[in-house]
Length: 169
Image 1 (cartoon, one colour):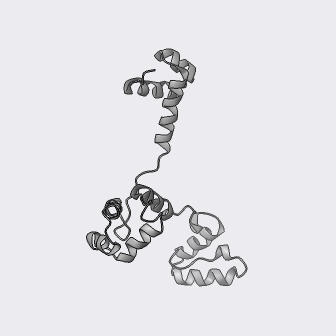
Image 2 (cartoon, one colour; image 1 turned 135 degrees about the horizontal axis):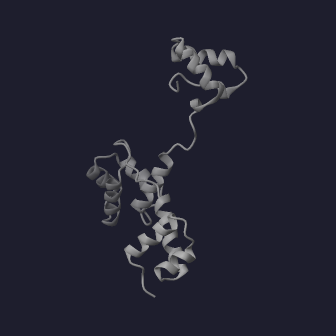
Image 3 (tube, one colour; image 1 turned 90 degrees about the horizontal axis):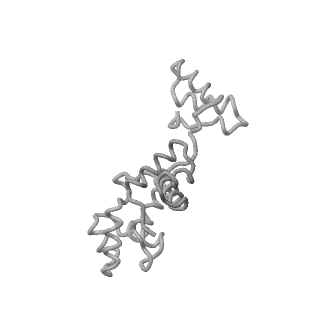
């Protein structure tokens, strides 16, 4: 069994996007239906892959995590590794201890997990509905965010979903 060339793979994806079935694509390209299926699955995975996470300087970067991994492999102390990457020893200790420990630390896995934890999956409270309408109305009347936040608690004392801090506004 030979691997499909990159040109054939691109053609398989194009034909599939044009509406051809896997069987039709396989017949047109002269390969097996399972080979076409494999190409399409890999393409779907590539499209679903999250974009690379570039954390703020306050967080560990991928390069710093790699330095930690290299330091662990060399048997260095957390203090020595921390000095090398200009971070606190407690940061290195939490990074290694919070993941898998010295024996199983993997920089790429740690970075990916940190990226997933850093994302906020929930929608903003001010995305729609009555709360948005009230806040917009009062902002248009030149109320300050502090005044709006206090007024929401007065007008909706039994509905915490209608309460927001002035920072949210």
